[in-house]
Every structure is written in structure tokens, then in C-alpha cells.
Image 1 (cartoon, rainbow, N blue to C red):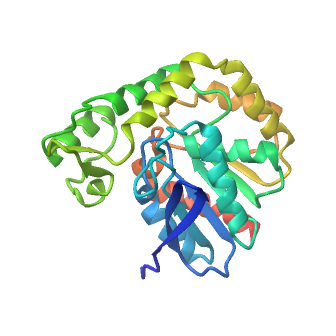
Image 2: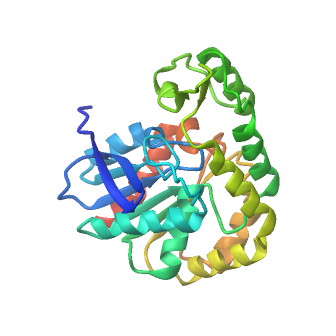
Image 3: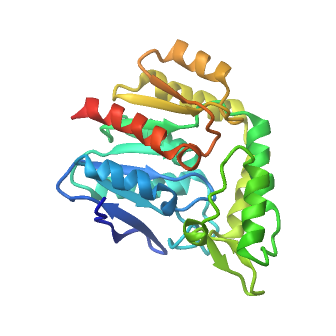
Amino acid sequence: MNETRKVINFKTAEDITIVANAFGKPTDTPVLLLHGGGQTRHSWKKTGERIAAKGWYVIAPDARGHGDSSWSKQLNYSFTFIAQDLQRIINSVEQKPVLIGASMGGLTSMMVLAQQPDIAKALILVDVSPKVEKKGIDRIFDFMSANPEGYESIEAVQKAIANYLPHRKNTGSTRGLKKSLRRLPNGNYGWHWDPKMLEVWQSISSHRNPSEFDDLFSEVLVNLSIPSLLVRGGISDVVSKETVKELLAIAPHLQYVDIKDAGHMIAGDSNDIFTDALLGFLKQLK
């Protein structure tokens, strides 16, 4: 497959520049690939290439505090600020985009749609729903906050990931992994995001009312008039089958796909099957 990737920038605030990978022709309908917390735009590489090859203009940004995008000196890392960045990216493209959001990317997509329900052409939620399982979220926080001093080697990082994702096949390749890491001042390898961001999220999580947050997004999905799809990892510990059942009962227009043997990070667990599901839905929009 011939890659047509280039790097583009979006100025979303006075001190924030969002860096993104773009695949395909800018004249095609845009698709925004929005990663989860602690990930980077590179997690979408294969998916972005395949979607662009089908005639879409794919933009995969690093959220603020992640990858090559700006870190916030004011620690403005709440989802409200990340959603504002997304809204400004949407406003900068010439056509209504399809929003494909994994975890954090899905939540911030719904925050934007809560304010402007018709700002997008369609919505795809990747293993995220208004109600998420606390056990799964706690496990994510535990993994992200482990080893604050970093890892001494790439092999140590691979071992940590294998312990966190025991169901995922280890290919032994470190090429993609290196793009998710950065060298720390002590010489170790650390994740490519601002560690202070996690402190902000944990503080917000401990003070907010979960039901108020869940009710807002349930209302968004119930009233959403644009085509929408929920993709769940078959062994996800973040979105349960019971939650999906409840959601489909109140939002029957929401299409649903379950990716067998995939966990919360579906794109990394079963990329080919996952991307096939996305392409099947996108084909309906042509």
C-alpha cells in the first residue's frame, strides 16, 4: 500500500499546537481518528492508511499533552479543553467530518456533539460508552502511573505491556512502540505524554459526580440524528455487554459491532477486523 501521510498542525489555543498525521486527499470527506488517553496518533497508522485508500481524508491528531502536540503550562488537561481543541480542528476543515473516537477520543467527541449535534457527518465510538466500568478505568490509571522514573530498556517496556495486555500477541517488533516513548532526563524510556496530565485526570475523577457525566452522554446519544456506531472489544473490561444492551435499548438507532478477542485497545489487538468494521460503516455514508 502506498502511504500518502504528511504531518500537519492546528493552532487551537495561544499556547497549544496540535500535531496530526494526515492521509489521503484533502478534497475528500475528512475522517478524524481520535486516540485514547495515554496513546498517540501513531496508534492509528494502519487504520488511517486503509481508510484513506477508500477515498477519505484521514486526520489523526495527538491530543494536547500527548505525542508531539503541546504540553499545557497551565495544566489545562480536562476533557473540556481537549474537546475545545477538537472543535477547533473540526471548524478548520472544509467539510463535516466523521468522528472516530477511542476511549478519551470518544468522550470528547460526545462533548462537542452535546454543544453542536450537527457539527459532524457521523460518529464512531471505539470501546467507550456513557457508562464505563470503574474496574477497567482503575486498571488503566494503574498502568499509566506505574514506573514514574521510566523503563531502563525497550524490552522492559515490552514486558510491562505484555503483563498489562496478556491477550495480545507479541510480535517482537519495537518500531511502532518507540513512537509512543520518549527519553527522560534520567536516560530511561517514558511514555510520550505529560505525566502531570494524569494527576489532573485523577483529581477530576475523584471530585466529579459520575452519574451526572454519564447522564449527559446518554442524552447526547439518544438525541443524536447523525449515523452512529459503537465498536466494543469482546473482552473489554471498560464497556460491558450489559451496558451495551442498556444503551441500545435507549438508542436503537446506534449500530453496534463486537470485535471478538479484542480488549479495550481494539485497534492494537485486532486491527484488520476492527478496520474492516469501520470501513463497512463508512461505506454506508458514501
